[in-house]
Image 1 (tube, rainbow, N blue to C red):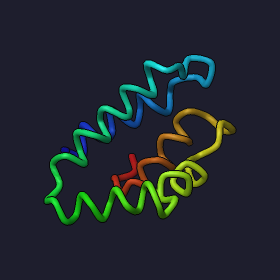
Image 2: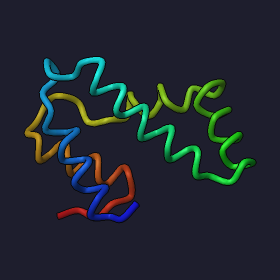
Image 3: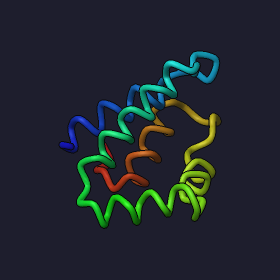
Image 4: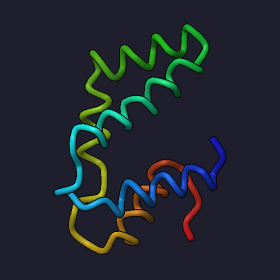
Amino acid sequence: MSAVMMDKLLDVVVATEPDQLDEEFVAAGLAFLSLALSRLPPSEREATLRAIEDGGALRRAIRRKPSSRGSSSDRAEGARREMGGRAR
């Protein structure tokens, strides 16, 4: 995924207000994650799935996400840094 596309996706996610986060939004995120995982080589995919399912990697990632405090642009910058993207 290009850095530009990642930036745009992060902007949408971070700008979405918590009361707008419904099951459809979560389902779309799961679809993106599933697609990304399906493109990994089999051994890497299995290791990543084990880390998510058994190792608690997803829960740790959720706890590290920027909180709802601060502006949406502050949250976007924090998310970009965490995802290894470039700051604006």
